[in-house]
Length: 83
Length: 238
Image (cartoon, rainbow over all chains, first blue to last red):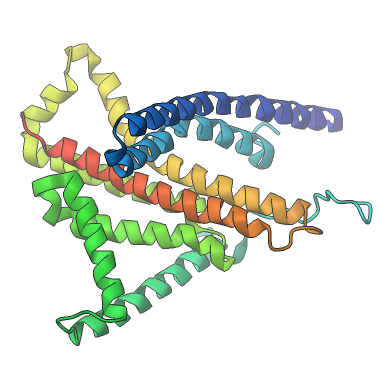
């Protein structure tokens, strides 16, 4: 029984680590958004404030999938649903 | 834990704690730190509202001092809602303004040493459900039952279950986005104060600026922006 619980806890930690890999996607997406925003500011410097707010909104929405990964990791580590 | 070690996992604390519990119809109901923090935020907002009401009663033509601040906030909210919702803005100004101020103050309350109430899924889910109720209500009000059924059967009738799942996902993703963002900030700050307690002097203020102020303000803006977009979408009739 003792071994079993520890085994599950260890596997949960590994799973949490794997779940946080989800952060790769939003990182790439936010980078693309920021790059295109920089290009847009270069093309039309007058619209800088509009471009910045649109970029931040898009990035915050793109972040969601990464946060789902974080949530799964948190659940595995602290709520311990499998034990 | 060994003494003198830099990283010690003893005092990491970002969970919700129960303050006291009572029995209600055979169920144990816990009053948690979230309730306390929501109460403090509410007291803050009610105090501000009373002060603002006082200031506006003696309003002068040329605003000075506190009246200036109140007018600035109202004008900012007016501009934000007006630029997104257009002619539907007047009906939703109060709702959007209220949730904007509540979420913003909740997110910023991490600066006061509170655990932000929005880092509890029990606070953000009701906000998402309120948005969902408004979306559904306005859909039925403006598109009528026929329009709603046509919208569900788009592009094909057998696509309806997918569309229903898409509709139900809206409040869940809205609330989870806000919750996870604030929670991640709270966890990061708890890790820094817990693990690096020996050298965490003054410099974590920079991280507070990012995790509490920047992230909190952006997420507040995103929540209100998406709420307005979804409601505007529901109010368009083809």
